[in-house]
Image (cartoon, rainbow, N blue to C red; front, side, top):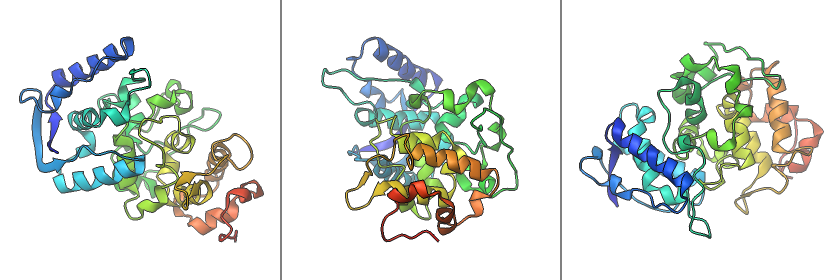
Length: 300
């Protein structure tokens, strides 16, 4: 148990970034855990206690962080790079665990230190409400008056909507897309009215950056912001009895998650997904998705 702190100052965050660069060259290099409590490197931000506890899934981590940071009542908590860097270091063994040979596979630095000052990379970590790209790489329009722009967490990122064609999310490695803790937290907060609908997206471990049902949706922020879409994805691919993603959900075959995302992107060109209910969206699904629909659910 420790007090909630953040890494104080650009130089300290930069030192953490240099460690990650070193880790890529020498995978057995231990993390600089001393930064967590050093009086010069860290600064107290709230009078709350943080438990260094294990998280089985991204959902568990996001739930804990939402409760923790709500109690901390920190202004603009999602834009505090020092805080999220400190939290990532605290839970580093879960975000970047040791392998069998005692080595860590660090991947992209931005998974650990959010690049909040770089608008072209910002959306990767904060899941901002970008309208994204179509399959052909053509930008879809964004309506400032849409329900998406009014979502509490996503609304403030509307200034970053015009993405560089070279920064098409589909071209970026899965490890680049989301800060290990901040991404799940923001998704959870956006759906805090009914977090259970997120089970299908946040069932994977924090270190599994390539989990299909997670990666495919965070590459498409408008979809992950839509309650009906997220609910349907969970109904289709999450086995509540076993607490796991159903076999075949991440495949390229008919009914898989990739096919669902492609279908939803096409449907979004005609319908306002933000205004659709879960039952309405289920009724539009092609027959190929029937094999994933639980028996108790019937298409309308």
